Image (cartoon, rainbow, N blue to C red; front, top):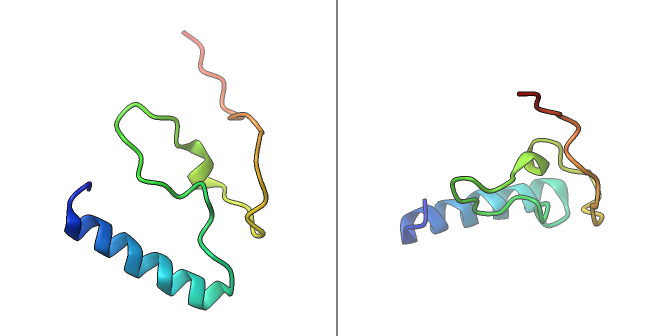
Amino acid sequence: GDTPEGERVRRVIRDRAEAYDGIPHAPELGSFQKGEIEWWQYGVTDDNRDRNDRCPLKMRR
């Protein structure tokens, strides 16, 4: 969550991932709020390049 403990846990996880991967965490891995578009975090790139693609999922009503 958006608590100090939640921020600390994210920092620890991301620091460990950076040590393992050799590059910083993907910029798409943010701290999302309810209702925000977060599909990018499920398909992050291996090289942290900028993304401008769109969600491939099309919802029909």
